[in-house]
Image (cartoon, rainbow, N blue to C red; front, side):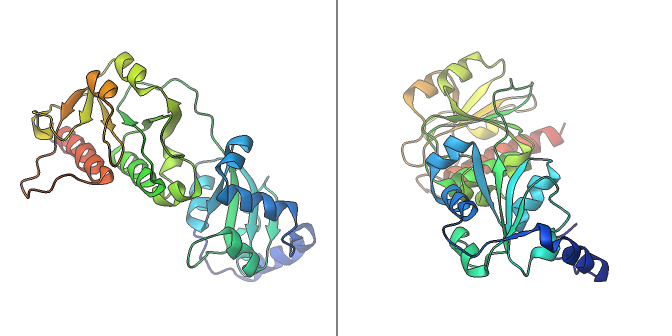
Length: 274
């Protein structure tokens, strides 16, 4: 069900009948407003509460489709009919548009934000491909990498301690809901994890002798990508098999998101060719 749907008379009556149970907030001093603002801007609050902020209708829709647990859902009066009755179990509050814009930093807010209880990430990974990310700093890059993994069918992701948050609002916007389809373990010791994996672990390294297109990727494998500027650490290179992406145009390097996309979809191509 799309949130842009046109609601008929029955839906409007539902909104009117439940209006008394919906809390309307107009003060910046309100605890709900302050909590959502903190989730939007403060990583310490997100860590302390194990929550994050979903900014926009698409992310809220994706979380609902994934059966994730929403905390607080905040809407404008205009968007209220789109959400009444759809977020059972989560408190629904109404903010003036000006107040909601202070929480949502996007240029054209969609009229809804929500807090999300972060999924637990401690379960062992099942067999299958794994993406290893070391010290990725930019939230937009993080979101793009996770979105690429989900699109390519990789479901398991390990993040080093030096990575930016996988669940920050900016990374969530970059991922467009990919996080909800992945098993993500943050704060991992990638060197130890790579050494213990029972599958080949390939690492993108500019100076590697072996080309990506020489790898046989028909079977499950792990793929490691490093920091935007420094690349992979020497310790992680030592326990992985390096490969390079041929660049006949003479460019020095690729953005880590582009390198990851080329690699994971070469894996898709090889397996579809079987």
